[in-house]
Length: 233
Image 1 (cartoon, one colour):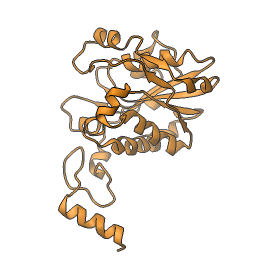
Image 2 (spheres, rainbow, N blue to C red):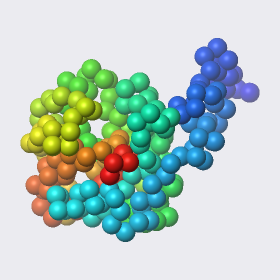
Image 3 (cartoon, helix red, strand yellow):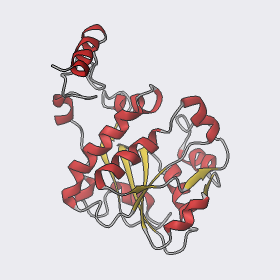
């Protein structure tokens, strides 16, 4: 055992790492979620379903090529902790790691075929400064690294908005209306297929607003990906 391995072993004894889902201690080769919980992850399999529920959510609202999320999100489910840990509990690399798992799971379906660049849903700079990171950017990095494609911060949040958590679908839409704008680098996305990425989709208002911002780029094609999808869709 070399020195780094010895240090990691010592840390695991003093401060054992636990599974984000079940809370049990993790083995050395389990970074964030134990094998058993990953095996029981409530997958959507949307990548294999034509006009799936997530695509239906955006039908008639904003033109997209395709859309999918890895697993179902339900309030109170132990799997909701994956999103909460990545978003609020200073574990952004959990989102990055889950994104690599998503690519491994979904790649055989062809869902990622033809994607040129990954774009994360942005946070307003004030919110990102308070949180310390943008969890969606880490998810985008995981996908970009797995597919060996570029990650572009091509959408910006032009203003702050209040939390979406307790809002109705209409309130969420109004809350995000006009909030996102193309960043200067977005012009480089002309004639390219972009994968717009977020952590979870519920009503779809945030992704819709970001997609509308990207549509200002000439001849852009947009697909959507989230780690999790609320059951309500």
